[in-house]
Length: 136
Image 1: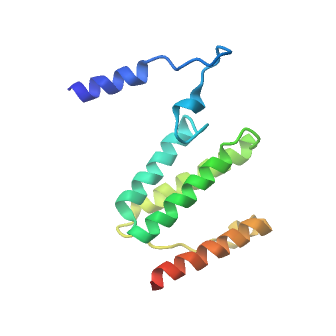
Image 2: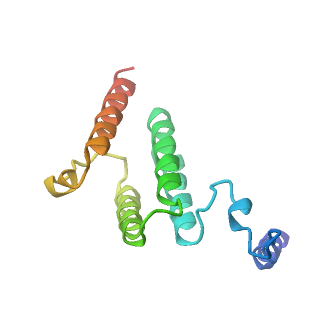
């Protein structure tokens, strides 16, 4: 149908060129430099949040996902770190997809052991916020 053919045209259209002749991919995306597999994963997560999470959880989850993807798609992020990031979020998608209703899952000691001080504080703050939303 017309909608499908227009999608094909958009996908097949050449990418805009910057002044230096390089493809300006970041300018095309509201997510900034998130491209390829990362963009697909990001969209899958946001779609799952829209269909599976209640309002307060969705609001909190969407903001967290946006922030994490922006942080991990900066040019200075190591490839190995980005691959681990993608693997863990892929696991999150599998877990949420398989649940009839979303339930939390405790982090393993191995996972918490890999967190630095700032990440542990962020996790604690996230837990407090989630608990305050649950009691509201």
